Length: 139
Image (cartoon, rainbow, N blue to C red):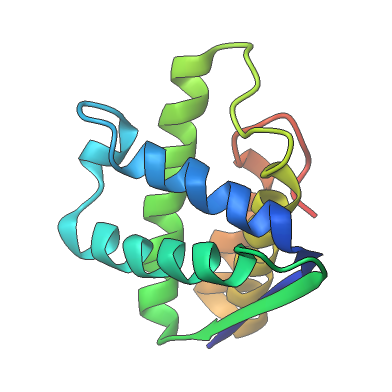
């Protein structure tokens, strides 16, 4: 399954990489509950986003390919972390303004990729799209 995110401002990609890294590595924070295999995958993606967004001035498109089952598993872990971060923040904004464009495009692209697979993955994506935590509708 291919996931393609973009075009998105490079600065937003880099800002989200910094934010995600902080969430993932905060002791006793939501990232602490991420299974080690998912955390390892997230760390790889965060490193790609940090490198891709670092110093770039234009819009970028980021993509990855993985087995649909892996993407589904990682999306659920991502959802759970997003849910915990939002619950802890209450009414406060969670994703920094400069990181928000990449974050919301990423979420939409992940759910679009799952939906394109059809069947139970499409149903899963539709459910998450309806209930994804945050202050925006998922594109």
